Each structure stands twice: as C-alpha cells, then as structure tokens.
Length: 141
Image 1 (tube, one colour):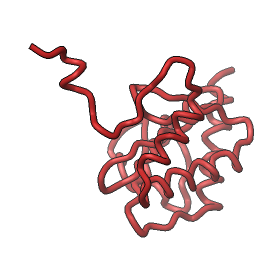
Image 2 (cartoon, rainbow, N blue to C red):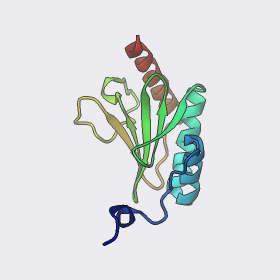
Image 3 (cartoon, helix red, strand yellow):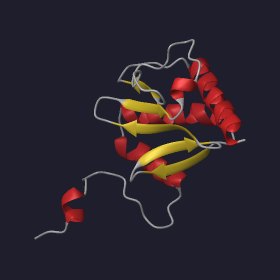
Image 4 (spheres, rainbow, N blue to C red):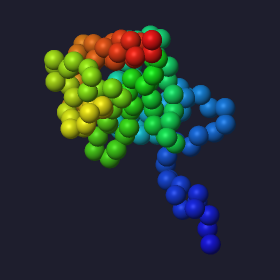
C-alpha cells in the first residue's frame, strides 16, 4: 500500500523545500504556471508591493501565497479558470470601485476573482491594499 503522501502529491505543483523563502516559492509558482494565471499573479504581486513596500510575503496552507502587514492582507490562490485574491477582512473594507466580486455573502472575507482577459483597476486595487493595511494596523493596537 502506498503512503498517503504519494497519493496526494500533485504533479507540477510547487513543492516546499527546507530553507526556501516564501518569496522564492511565490516566484516558483508564477514560473510553473507559465500562462495567464502566472502573469496575473505576478501583476497583482507587483501592485501589492507598490501599494505597501513593507508587505511581508508568506507561504501558507501548503502552497498559497499570502501577503501580510500586521496580519493577513490577502491570499493569491490559483485555479484552472481564476486567480482568487481573498482579503481576510474584506467585509470591513470600503470598495467604492466594486472590485470585490466573490465571497460576498460572508461576514469577514471578500474576494476578487480574476479570469483570463480580465483587467484590474490598478489604482483602486492599490487603494484597497492600503485600506487593508490601515485596518490591520488599527486592529493590532
């Protein structure tokens, strides 16, 4: 009988190696996707860093890029047909541009699902990131 770890291992997925930094793991995920999802993840990552130069990149839940500043700002999950940016405290954020288009029914999180060919309002996205930082800072006190 094979070990469960062999059965559950996904082919083509980024594998964590001891000593790999979260940023290197995110780099590897972007490279391995090698399609619109990788380009989209790279673009939003760049926007997050522009909006918050002090953001900390982490790698959680066995393969999810996470951006943090005094707590989780958002995650960057990739699926076959979408890149999902889930904001941990999204329900508490103002979203005048209407970027949130997923997970709208919850009391805490909100998400932005990006599909192939979608464009994101970069200024509105950076404003949302900054608002998430401000919210985390106020919650941390």
